[in-house]
Image (cartoon, rainbow over all chains, first blue to last red; front, side, top):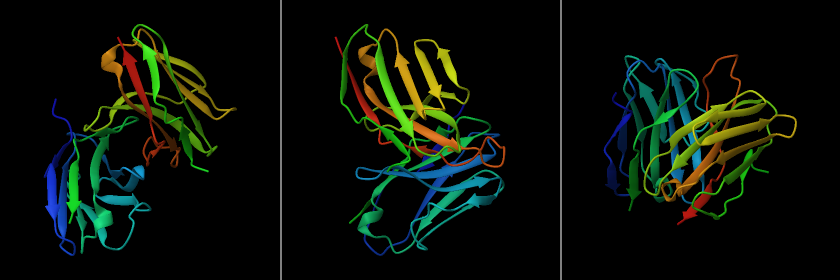
Length: 111
Length: 115
């Protein structure tokens, strides 16, 4: 079956611009997670959705980061006023029970 | 101290050997543990998870958990060059008795299997 999909696969933006990253989870998966992976920091948690609500937003690094999920399905991660330190691979994962299954990621480069 | 620690390696083993990957965790509230494989430039791929003390086998992979020692390991039998990748260990706290919640990852161990 179809896995987690993310778009765009690559995004280059200028410092100060806003970006939107999209995640389409595996059909039927109720939980959706956003992580990011960078060379210095490894894989770090950002936010988790159960249905359309977010029980855990503890990993969002600043108020420039926000996310929403609609219809218990697609999620959008928005980064406002991007900074160079936001450059990373943003990974979305979804789960039904134990395992979390990752999408291919969005590689974000902020110039 | 990092919550999940792995030896970054690289770990190099000959083809056909057993590769042993180790992970320790500091949060005693962690209940479930996951092993992911990540090829260069790709996203992590779930290999297996374990939440009970002891061994869990799946094909060539065996996960081992010792909660008293706060130790998790992954054994790969009959290692193949295609097993060469970064292996990530992750833990999850038992969030209100559910099977959901964030994963905390180690830095990963680079495994190289040489012919």
